[in-house]
Each structure stands twice: as structure tokens, then as C-alpha cells.
Length: 313
Image 1: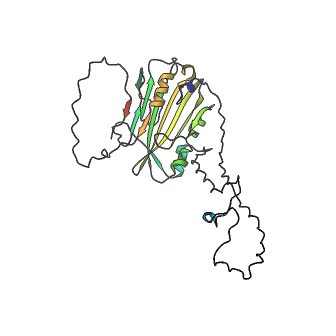
Image 2: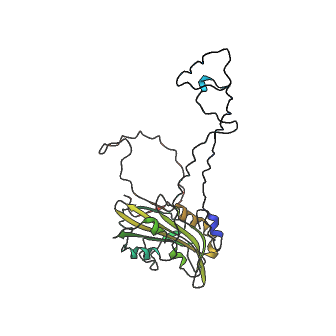
Image 3: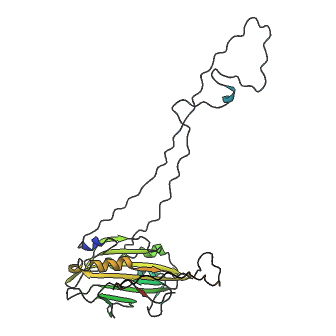
């Protein structure tokens, strides 16, 4: 499961990581002016008895040189003047995946406590979790510190239900570099039994540092396919770790593809905006909206709306 639903149909393939570095070399063209040939000095005519003194600060002109171009160095044909070298653009900073230590291990080493958050009274962030048709909120004691858990109550193979889990922690105490922290985002998945990666990325999520890894692992006698995302959100002086895991059995990947893809693509984390619209002074009452014309009656489509977890700020 990924941004492309077809990846859910790939049943476990090892991924190879290739790193390429593009080097931009500035090539500077050079030009040199060739010296003009030295003109021979002609003898003075014999009829001139007294030489004429040259005017001070006057440069004798060579044949073919006009006064307008006197003093300008000549450039041979076919040679262009030198141009300054192009300045290569600074490369975008990259995140190197950590080789050990989960996010929990990283924060513990920094003296940071992870405080689990409850969706009942949570206001710091807006978290949207799409609810596919046939899925329901369920209490799941197997998910420690669960913020929300939804599962497919209609499909499945009778042994395992496709599900999505959200966990939110407030990061209390200490300081850390978000880019360094998120480099540990793959480790928890890579430590699962018989883990095989199918995709991974450190692309920002809504402008926030994030890690996304997808692949398969073994759970008892079953092979499961999972997509796991970690997001580091900053709200004023506070920082939060938001984690989403969407998992299904490999024999249900095709049947559950529409639902799991909707969850992965529709999941959102954002900071509530408290700023007024541009051009509206603080405390000013909003302008009344013009009355809208009555809309024709349209039969309602029974599509489940996304679930906003917590209270919108």
C-alpha cells in the first residue's frame, strides 16, 4: 500500500537502495586577445628638414582602427569573451537512514518522555483518518497507547481483519533535531519478523518531517502487508509524534486495496490555524455573506466522511 495503489499488489519484494549524486561542474570559457602585429616604422620624407613633435598623450592609430575604437583591445574572430562561471545550486539536504535505534530509543537517549494522547479531548492537531465503507472504530488492547483503531468488519479471511492504527505522543523534555530523529523512522518496521521492504521514503508530509516504509512481515503463520508512517509535528513550543500503521493479510491485499489506499492517501495531520483571514483586522466582525440561491434537491450519496480525530482547534 502506498501513494500508488498498485504497490499493494506487490507481495513482498526486497528493495535495493541506490544513491546517486549529481555533480554540476562549472565550465568557464576563456579568451585571450592576440597582440596586433607590429607595424614597421616608416622613414621620414627627405624633404622635411625639421621633425614634427607628436602631440602629448596621443596614441598613434594602426591601419584599420578608427578613433572610436582606439584603446579597445581587439578580440580575434571566433573567440568569445570570458563569462563568469555558473554557480551550482546548493543540493537539497538528504536524510541518511539510521542503522539502529527506533524512534523510542532515540528519544529516550535524548531524555525525552513520550506522553500518549487521547482523541477524546485532543486539540493540538487536526488528524483526519478516512473511514472506508464497512470499517468501524474498535477498542484494541493489542495497540498500546492507541489514539484510534479502525478495522474492516465486513471483509477479511476469517483469521485477520485489515486495520489502521493511529498513535499520538507529546514529546516532553529535552531538545532534538527533527531530521536526525526521523532518520530512525524505518527501524521499528525493519525489526519485525522476516521483514521485507517494498518502498520507503523520507519525503515531508504536509511540510512536516516524516518517514514512510512499506513491506511484509510474518506474524505466527501469516504474512502481513503493512504501511507505516511517522510524522513529527511542531505546535508552538510543543512537539508531537503521530504514527499511522495500515495492515492487512497478503491474501486480502487485492480485496482491501481500495480501502487501504483511501486511508493511506486520505490521512492528514495539520496544525489548526488561529490567524484571521488576510485583510481582516483582529476583532472585526466578519462581513455578511450574500444569500445563496436555493440548490436543487439532490439525492444524498451514502459515502462515509473522513473521521476527524480529536477536537478541531
